[in-house]
Length: 440
Image 1 (cartoon, rainbow, N blue to C red):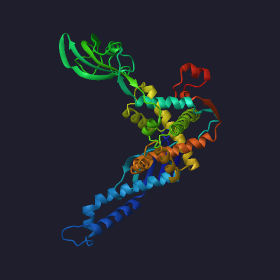
Image 2 (image 1 turned 45 degrees about the horizontal axis):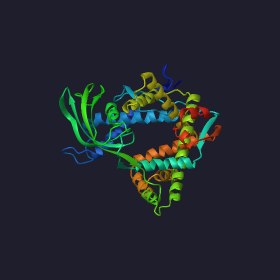
Image 3 (image 1 turned 180 degrees about the vertical axis):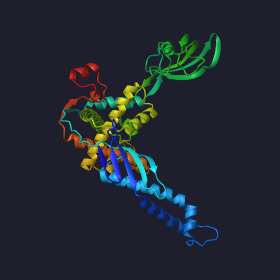
Image 4 (image 1 turned 30 degrees about the vertical axis):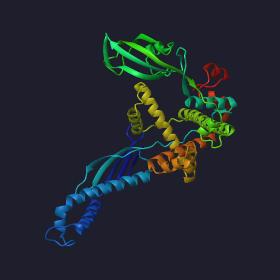
């Protein structure tokens, strides 16, 4: 692409389809007019010894402020002309231009070149689908399972006269030695551990399982090579352990007291179960939307292949690296960055073409829905509104949801009933295979 007139030349370098090279000439008379304007402004404000404000002779103003006025004039002319070309040629720059002044002095034409990447001009492709929306109906079993988790979170422990097993809480003393010598941190009294929680090294946990209160045992414990303590990493220590107590978990009954502890004022268990149901239904809707949205964005990424601005891809790669998203090979990182930029361009273009906006009403509705998950929704909403950055991020999420809704209204979506556990990704692999559900 190349456009040229007396004062402007616009071209696209070979091999860089989104790069624009804009060469602009500003006549010397216009440069001088802008310099004179700057000098008049300086003359009105200048304070020089021996002269009254506004009464400084032009030659003195020129001598003191001529170079500064020239630089200001060149800057303003460059910004003005560059902006005029962007508007006149309908160019949407990705970032700031790289400006090179070829010529610019008193009595000369100003000639400069601005090189900038622009957003691609393309029409988003809307896939036909089909998409599958997985929906779950909450059952009494789902409610019971959730209440069981709540019970476990509020469990107490009662001492028992039997060998320790997984799920028990064990109180013990232990003393460790390396090559027969005690080491710092190797001796602990009255320490409590939960068997099966994964907080102990395997050798120690295996040794505790099967011991009863009052028993003692020597056990060799191997420390992994990456253990935080350099003194212990890769070595084997011997521990003398003594069991003080073995206690088994005791779950609270799902009764009025339990309901009241969860905020049900009158202790009505039926009301508690209804609240659990509503929370699970809300979570099921959220996960269902996340899944269908992910599938939709996959389709959009496959169907749309606009030219990608190199600057945006580089920024996305840098952002991912700063967020330590660098576990994948370099080629994988670049592919992920390109996918994110591609989707960003497509969604932004739909917003632009369809003039979608995140209205105050939609923002407030999204905030109230988010606040509903907290104990005091009003307090959470008030706290959230105080941070402009949080509200800006919420606005971006609301706008993205609008784009997703707009797209979902234009693709074929079928519903597939699944169990809540399966929807949440907790179903056994065999069950998922039998149902024909896509693991992706």
